[in-house]
Picture 1 (cartoon, rainbow, N blue to C red):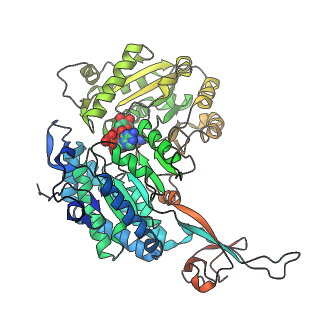
Picture 2: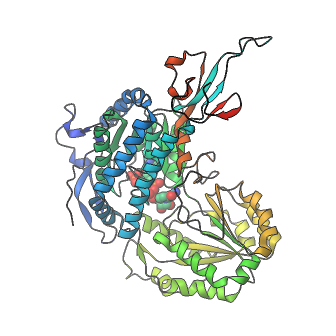
Picture 3: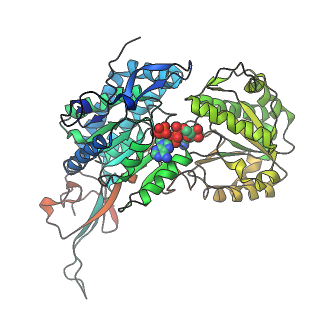
Length: 546
Ligand code: NAP
């Protein structure tokens, strides 16, 4: 195994904080913390050091100073930066993936796939920048002779919002972390990024940050456009959101933390947008003809989806609406599929503990019946089962009970799902209307089910950001048309996505330039259209001069 060098220190601009003469050369050991290997429960060397408020302030000041020069860079420069980050990540892939494996217990093939996704998404944003129409350039030409009043020359486009705070997620140590989708989108938008590393994978975070730092140096861009801040607690994250130089927040994690950050962002003297992706229970609707025709296939793929990655995905299908008279083959296959599964290590012992507590609460409350008698499920109660692991479990409940029990719609992060038995289509439609916001909804249909699906679709599109047919929501394609968002409480702002190139819109704001001399306009708005981008010119899509 390769042995990378760690400093354990926050990165402010191009400096590790101890290199900054205003900071002590020796970090305060009181604030030292270590990652834990979730598979063994043992601490991992070396120690990492929480940033101090002064270091956070320094990083924010550097970001604020870098914001204007960064906003003045061309799309081509930023596309080159994103590609350079991807190249540096690939060059350091082996140590990064090995460290991520130690810190998260996620399997190496999954982490290699996540690295490919991370570099792929950086390059996809680079393509977006080069294509150019994302700036939404709009031109209303001057009409000096218009009566009764002349019209001025009006040109608008999207411009960067300013420095962005990004919170790395525990369940995607690469793709939703230091160089993940939020960072890629913010850098593409020309916004400096201050990442608060997730304390569960500090070593992975540092290695990724070095790749970003190398790419910034190589690209001759201002050092302040990126900083990485460690913290073993929540102080630095909270101070980051409240810092006057920050202009937006991007977060992926729990509802408790996400809502705390939303409140902090809203209650600042100058409120800023907080884009929090806080998880979801992702209802799946098994329609009557589909379950009759494909009971085994649906059960097998459902089991694979809710246990994937030990159920630690915000897209895990956690609510499954099943007809009361579903074929026994469905339940038998589900039972069989999970019977052989062993308990898996969770990302952190805290997440495993929370899962165990939620399962225990559900069992004790008798709100839902445990319906699976699989070996792995029995192991949940087995004191010999290793700490930090979780075994799959399936509950079931009647639709009437579900409608009367709001707690059953809350996320349990881990390998569990809830079957909800419905009597007839009318009851299913009532259930769809009852749902709060989620990231996804899935319909399993046969051709006979299409009339019911057509009734459900317009209801579900008001509840979620992505509707799927005959698939499973785990596995979110990074694409131009992806929507990974949804109404509250799934996210803080249902108008946005945190996956795909439309994620850039969270970090942009429209600016209108009225009668501004052509030579000092951004090139996207200049008469000659030097970048040859698609623009809305007097109501028509055009690449012509205007
Ligand atoms: P988390 O508790 O939401 O923490 C995410 C990040 O926010 C961490 O850096 C955390 O720092 C910080 N944080 C937590 N509370 C905060 C607060 N009040 N103010 C400022 N910062 C705060 O998520 P997690 O540790 O990854 O996992 C815990 C639970 O989150 C899981 O059991 C699951 O329910 C949920 N989760 C959801 C998703 C999703 O995709 N939506 C992903 C991962 C986890 P500290 O760790 O130092 O507290």
